[in-house]
Image 1 (tube, rainbow, N blue to C red):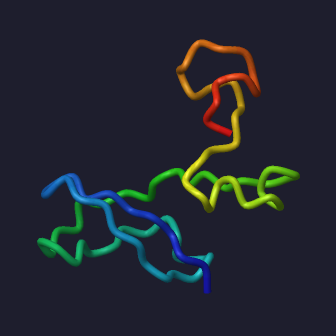
Image 2 (spheres, rainbow, N blue to C red; image 1 turned 90 degrees about the vertical axis):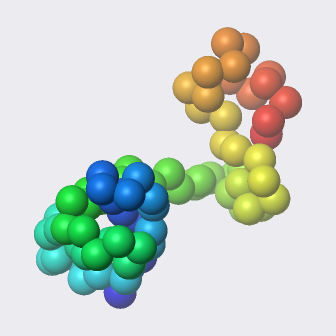
Length: 79
C-alpha cells in the first residue's frame, strides 16, 4: 500500500498515511487535530542517475532548474 502525504488546513500540519490507490483522493482525518479539512500533497520523487547515486537521500536535491536559485540546471551546488 503506498504512503501519501497530506496537509491539514485546520491545524496547518503535514502527515503521512498509508492509503489504497483507489482511496487516495478521499479526505483523510488529521492525526493531530481530528479534522477532515485535509488534502493530498504533491510528492516529489527523484528518478534517474542522481537517485542512483543517492544524492536525494543524502539531503541534496535533483536539480531541475525549478529550485528558485536562478542558476542553470546542474550548477546550483545543491546536487
